[in-house]
Image (spheres, rainbow, N blue to C red):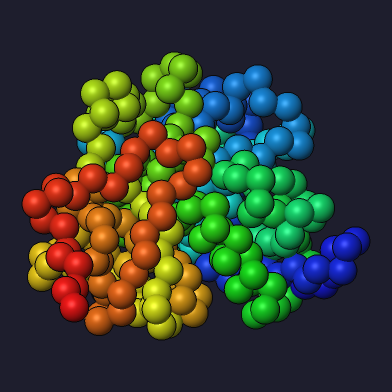
Length: 282
């Protein structure tokens, strides 16, 4: 049920998430060979962040994996759940693995609630509930605002399924890709982008001079497209931008934006100097 954490802050189910439980004696090896995150050697009780990719390196679905004693629960976007089950079923072949989509709710809350969100210290915690967790609009908005602050995008809300590489979603920054683990689907493409530094699309935090436009609204600079709005709340949100084109003077739907890269990010906004918006003269 939606309610209060020990420090009095509210929690809420996230109605746009679904749960898939992966069981069977070969579940760990099965997921380790497919997902971008490390599953092997993770103790029960851990929560890890990752994704299933296409062989071309595009995100089929991002996910949170709750490591349990007897199974692994995947917390995934509702819009991706059916396709994810279908793809995992195809990969299963004769492996001793079971797949079950459940009616459990994903519940999000502030620091001190559930299990710490691995994408960033300030995002809070998450848990699974089987007893009809309730929706608390204010608590859900607060969760997304913490997510915006941490620049932690989510599939569907901030970028399209089968349309983004992990680097587009900053998964190298938010601990969603383990570059030291063994092979996983799409690894060759993602590793090449990492080592060559060829990623050009990245997610940034955006702040507007007025409430931000809807997700999918183009970002422009000097009349040229430089990115696309993701989700937002009021004047704060996220956007995916071309880092070689974005800089001062970006707007979305007529709203002037300030763009901020994540703390400690291995990239910067680097629009050409000659393309800078001219300062107004007196």
